[in-house]
Length: 389
Image (cartoon, helix red, strand yellow):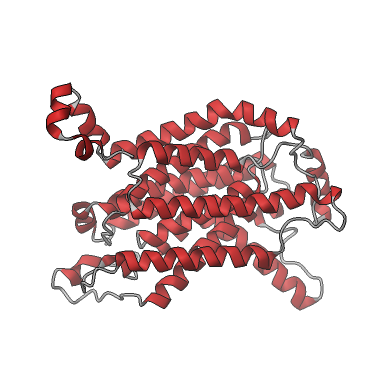
């Protein structure tokens, strides 16, 4: 929406006396950080009405869980309004539409990723909420059903991303396999000491599919305590804001020796909108929560993080930022695998890992706040690693 300075024209802007204002609005750094404020305010203003609407429509948590050890906790949270992720998605969309250049290819794909996964999560939430009123009702979508739509989205999005980044130049950074501590531009500038690996289409698409699907499910699994997923997502989103600004600015990318992906800097607006929306949602989601995001929000947030990481070629660094998400999903994989292999034995008291800590005596608020602290530290360390090359 904002390419004001080019669309209106310098002479007209000067004649109207708004030349300096439009120059500021044309700067992606300003628009990205202003998107944080806009999306935050959107959630704060619309949050109370959303909660009242969800209560009026009786869209509340069912209090049902498969884990016997969590039944007491789940019962206490029964009827808390859920599907608040729709508010997060609306806030991200609002901030993006108001502050981003909607002709940008990566922005349009980012919106598709968010809406696709929010809709998928919404269907999953709907099945869970209406299971008791439908004959033969089931608790949400089957795992394979969600994976089909997640992998399908990843396939389409990453295929088009690869095509868009294919300039036919041997130094094209949009397809490079970027490893932390690697001096990317040494090879480009004629120093062969840091050989780059340019991913073929199939490898690029597979990695992108795994990022989008994996982080989408990881965020979904993490969303099990008041403020946990929203707080962690806030920290990661603000880290992504910095990464996208660097990747989109050639001089910054050259200076820091990381891949420069033309046009990707505009994704800072989506990252900023995501950070602001999550911070705003945390206002209502902190313990005791007035509203849950549900799968509607968690699937969309994780998938959007994976998409942005794929575009700016920082998959490994973003996975490091998402350390809390990874611990959560790995704990579930380990628990399920070990349970099946041993005929009923467990590694953790309960999975995902935040429930293991809770059942070990940690108060819920302590688990959540410490997860926030770890996430902030991981984001700071990841950004520091950009300079340590």
